[in-house]
Structures are given as C-alpha cells and as structure tokens.
Image (cartoon, one colour):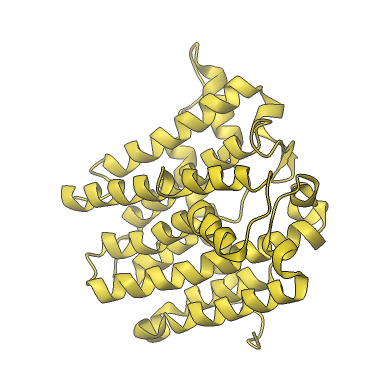
Length: 301
C-alpha cells in the first residue's frame, strides 16, 4: 500500500486511548483482598500495564462516528480488552500454544501457576459480560442486551473459541488458504468485528453503516493476522514482547507458510486497501480508523 506512515496525531490518539482504557480497567478489576487475593492479583497482572489496545481503539473510534458518549464507549472498550486478555491467558497455557512470554514479561501461568491462569481467564471473561450488563454502560436495556449477544457470539463457539480449536488442529495437519482464512476470521477477526460494530450498536446506527464497519473489520482482521504471521516468522522477540518462531516450531500452517512471505505481504496490503474503502460512507470522520489500518500494516510489534 502506497500510503505514508500514519500521521503524528495517530500515535498520540492511540496512546491517549490506551491510558484511558487502562484507567477504566483498573477501576473495573477487583482490588486484591480476602482469601481470593491471588485471583485478583493474577487478573490485574494479566490485564494491566501492556498491550496496544487496538481493539479498544476500534470501539471508541467507531463509537465517535455516531456521537456516543465517551463513558459508554470506554466501558465497552474495557469489556473487549477483558475478553481479549482472557484469550491470551488461555492461549499461552501448555495445553494450547505453550508460550512463556507475553507483552514482554512472564505469561500468567508462569508468574502464578496453570490453575490460577485458567481461573483468571474464566474470571476476566465473565467480568466482561458483567460490565456490559450494567446500566452505566448504556441506559437502554435493548442496547445492552444486543452488546451481550454480539460479544458472546464473537467470543464463543461461533467465533474465537471455534477458531482456536481449528488452530489446534492445524498443528497436526496442513491446511489450505480457505481453511486458514476461516480459522482467523473466527479466532482473531470475530472480536475485531465486534469491536468495530459495538460503536454502531451503542449509537443505534442504521444497518448500512453497521455493515460498512463490519466489512472494514473483516478485511482489517485478516490483514492484522497476516502481519502477525510475518512478525512471528521475521520479527524480533525484544520488539514483540513474545517469542518468535513459535508457529514454525509447532508445525502450524500460517499465511507465511502457505503463501510465502512476499505473497503474504502483498495480500495484507491488498486487504488493508479494501478495508479503507469500506470507510467511504463516513468521509473524514473515519480518519482515525484509516490511520489505524496503516498502523496495522506497518507495525513491528
């Protein structure tokens, strides 16, 4: 893609949003106390102090298109980050990806233990739905209900969890591009799609605009995963904050192993260009989402 690097305004906006979401998460997570103190410590360890918060940025940027109040948007953004963190905690477990490093420090099951990590993921997932269900998220119960249904679909057996089981199977056998695409539409793309459309749900947006955001998220999610595969093959652990080469070591099929690095890179850029075109109905109001697309393609971590 020939576009220049994201303008200086974008990194500042992303950093500001990350700080706001960090504050919101710190407020929502339980304070460590009582006999369950270890669980609370692990929840805060896994969630706070790391991550780019790209999914949260998608929620708040999409919500801004429809004039949604910042408080509502931040609560939904925090819920998405809780689900995302739960997935990382469980993915790192020995029974899954067996990774010992996450966001530049020990994975939760290394810092605590496997049982605590499993329970931490369980607790983060359920807390996300508690946040969405509360009236503080939105005054309209129909909106809250729709958010809950859509996030449950994105995270569960028709979304992220389904993608993870396909991913585990892909360690044992070669898969084609169609299966690989399906895998990542579910494992990565479903939560990204929810993050984009949640803003439209909060803003009671008409169906065509919801569909435009969903199409944007579809292409962005696949582009993100291809770049992730490229970074795993070619990146640097010190920059990524997690091990590199783990996919190849596990014998996993990836976009890099199936397409080769150059074709994979070309495909990612093509998807990014398509994603940006889906934002045309929003004109200049969607500039931050366009900048985010460029950031995803050019990222090194």
